[in-house]
Image (cartoon, rainbow, N blue to C red; front, side, top):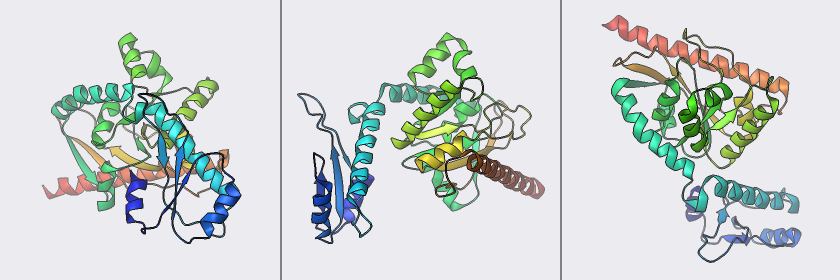
Length: 314
């Protein structure tokens, strides 16, 4: 839809390059002959009776001198891959069974949370306030102080379905009903990188696929609950996903312990963009994970300062 909106803003003349067995060199030469925006349309020819046709529309761009046949083919391949992921996670371009499960969960859980744990939201800026209505891919992160965090985080993004990243302990050891629910909701099941590297890699790959399909992921970077309210050390997986997918990180911080019928306070921070911050290697991931942890500590300090000022005025 974003690409379609950009098309409407583009000049009247717009070239659509359809997918097929194309000579990309000849196609590029033809496109460069006319200095007008180009919009690629990826079509993998999955036509059939009573089947929805799948096409994926790219953002308009103007082929410059730096554009090559290889880069043009790469653009097309990326569109085809995005279309494949869209079909995988959004059947027929409409919905996925896991989306229905998540919607049911929101219907059951969110009113309960609003009633028993009313919440007040604070924002570090007007830009941070807009983060609750983000569109496209993103990674929502927060500190982890109780099991209720996983039910609270979806309330921060009322217009989006949030796919949570769930650790192996929670996924397997909370009874058959919870295991069935999590499995049907298609949460991202991850394991410890040391004890189960295969499961860890599988979960990372699925999370990356979801981000490429423009999903919003929910992650607790600490990887475990810290009941004392202190912030633990961050795992590097979240910044690795941000680097590879180009998704922004949207931080929030829970400032008070959960108490029944007591107002919870959550501070929403500005988006963090790690694109172009380095190559995907161990050293870069450790540096960026520490940077994200520092940003969360700063967010905590800002929230505590706001609450202290309000208390002093009373």
